[in-house]
Image (cartoon, rainbow, N blue to C red; front, side, top):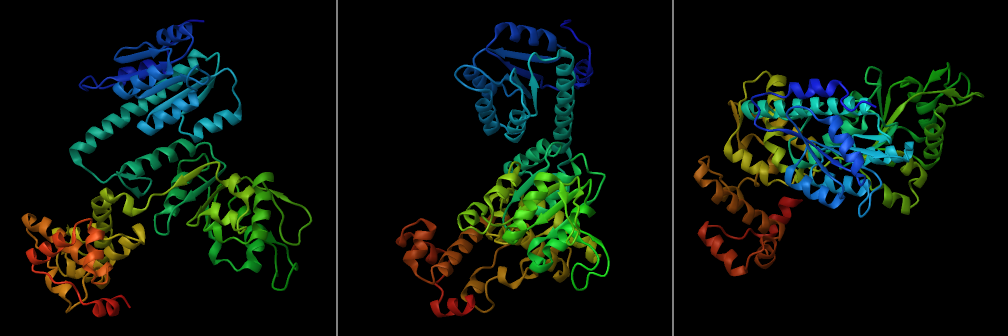
Length: 486
């Protein structure tokens, strides 16, 4: 077998910008020295650094120190398996492309590897031509990412992936997972709190899947009447029940060769869960009143804000259905866990509100941004969207200010908090404003109890009293706080 196989790798290597100061590199890890030599010679190209080691632990250290764009590793090795090495690499940098090689290839092992973050799983002996093509495509993508990041640093645009805005580590990891699983999944489960954007994640999976050109059909399981559930999902034939005046296709048939999105699947009745499981297993549906089943080819994405494992323990959700759906599971982070994305989201949503209301809104004042940054956002991105939509309607200037925000984000009018919490617009006063805000919020949460408020702020009671005097504040009246909460 020829070692220097021409292919897309050469083109990819030549495509690396000459002006770029960074080099592209590949790390190859294999216990067999002859395999290392063969692969390193076959993949040698200009401007491409190839790192090799026969020890997976040394390979992990090499990865930590050199951060190669691609890792090519054997699945079965001494001291550390390829799967364990994959897990460690994903913990360090989830954007790395990892290719596993194994002499014991199976669909199950390949799916497990992809699920854990691998880009591919190849069968040994590896075809050098196929490997060149795969590495070439990955290098092209790495080159595109490098150029994109350079351009992003210059222009500083919003970070957006398939309509989802975010640049935090949690969001980048989620985007990477969507990219990896979208070409392969048949069923997927999206888990996240209400308002995090699970529907957007479902649509992103659809757009990145092989059925992107076909229908995306959504149904909210919590909004369907239980007695009509089977008819809505699977359809019915004429005369099978009162009101069935004609044959009707269900959502599964309507989504044939496309994607069916089952939102709030945790609210699906147990009886329907059993029938859904059968459809997922057999890829066929039977209309209510029909004798013969119909074949369907559907990608199914389910979403829930419930803890399905707890629901399984309470016998309100089927364990077998959970494992069928959670082969690919994507967690959507809470907004409170990715507050570094707030400026991006604010800019994106303010621009949307400005376009919707026909106003020239440039953004938020500094004090409005501070106020929003201190909110816990229990309603997640949906709450932020509603807040900025309200503010966009209310503002009479080109900048959204504190008084444009919904009342619940502001201190109650006429209270001590409202009088004292006047966040100054000057940046030099921002720190003092944040300190005042945190103290007042802690006092409100503690019902005016200074000892409890000090514990919440993780400072001593004397220190709290000093800060109250420093900012000319007084503890709010407990009775007024109770009325305000009600």
